[in-house]
Image 1 (cartoon, rainbow, N blue to C red):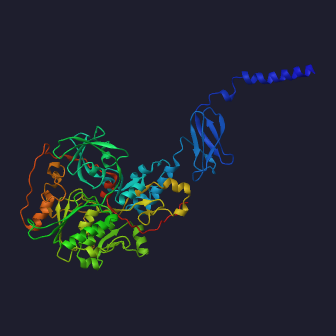
Image 2 (cartoon, rainbow, N blue to C red):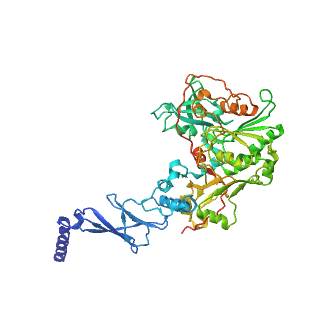
Length: 573
């Protein structure tokens, strides 16, 4: 028995010793570089091949949260390998797996743009590749050259804020509208001129007013890198503010909040001494928000009851907005007989696919005077101020864009419109908001039918939206202003561009000594055009930095079509 045990011990020792002493086994060799990997769908494994010829098998990790499920593995040295479809055997990719969320969003960008974009014929051949993992980068890569030059189209990963902005709501805002200018040439330093302040907002309560100069935020000079804090922040902010004479610096603390920005900022009827028997209705209108059409109705009801003979519509800072608001305002101003007849106000044209869809469904590409949302707003005919003899004066600058231009241009076939100031921005295009599946009660164009998307896909797509150019507008006679690239005033004020960059020239909104309003009064009364001259401690012109808030940028780039009619055309496979 002892002999048997000794023999077994000896055999065991002999079997053990080679394993611990042999130095040439492959397991301890330098495997070299990983040169290829093959995935086996049946076994859910990867076979790895190294540069010295050695192979190795590792298990795959299956991610069932993607469509289709992916297979991947991470090696001890950190190298990653993967295949995008775990049900298919074949060559695997060596490297970090692209973010599947971004791939899905990139496909949404292509699908939406190839259908609805005005220049969709250029997009169709630009399908995303495996390298197009950043949807924002891909979006801008496929834009038409004219669009790229002007910066008309946008993409966002915060579509809820975009939609709130279209409703005239600003989140995390202070309530003042700044103009960003370079403090000096060849510098990135910025100063903010306060154009106007919305009532009952943090800025209003803090005493900020038109003409104030903002130089610092939280002790830091404003620059091209931090200027956006003037448009809103997510925490309490301390601004250093000077008065209009660049004097009396003070620190103003404001806490941002959600504010409602009623675009009917100021209105008044002027009459009596200095107006030669005329009654002048003046309206300073900041944006075309349909949500505030009732404010327009109340204002024009007051104008009508006062019996105004002339209307001055101040759009000097109005970057635009929705076509529904523009049509409603036009219905308050145009000859009432044309509004009653529901005459054509503007005509839209789209790409071939969208035009054909409208034609097949017998949808109208025209917008009509007198058309409005009857369930939400009062009939504009009731407050219309034009019985055929109203004189209309519209104040514009280079900051007047999109819907401001549409209103001015499309009213002219029906009445005499005197345009005062400077040439407008030149935005003759229109855009839709595009979402993957949410139509936002008819205000947004969806790409996919919602029931064709999984919950996982909807969750990945829900925050993304696009605001691409989808059309061009003309007046009722199919005329446009593309050739002039902006509306040229028939009563230009030569110093407009300079004055808007020289804060010493500014007056309170509605002040009859304001250089643009004074020009309108001169035309109305026939009196000479004069304005008082004042000088400040810094009576110079600054260079416009052309830096805007996100919403202002979007409005400036084209009229918002806020009622697209197409049903989601695609089923996501």
